[in-house]
Image 1 (cartoon, rainbow, N blue to C red):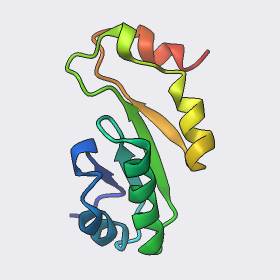
Image 2 (cartoon, rainbow, N blue to C red):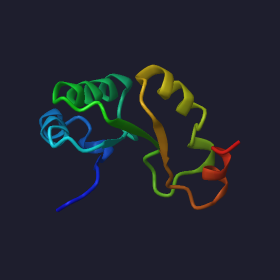
Image 3 (cartoon, rainbow, N blue to C red):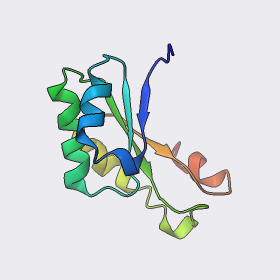
Image 4 (tube, rainbow, N blue to C red):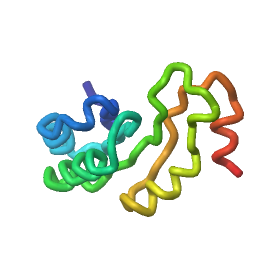
Length: 105
């Protein structure tokens, strides 16, 4: 398949051999962080870097379906950007449009 990027689900973000193999393909990597600890996120990013791929982005995710608004913690996105020095987006599982719009403000 000629996909433009690879997305790693949060439950696969601890599968370092998978991440290294995928990152070695040289395409952008998007890693969801929903059930990951900070250490696990760091290890996933480092696996990409070891494979020679620095084109990594993270998705802040609340792993409940649907995600309740009071559990979204959107303020963690700037912290993630500062901590990991990569772009951070949102994997939104809420049932509204307010959550993604809140990121614009």
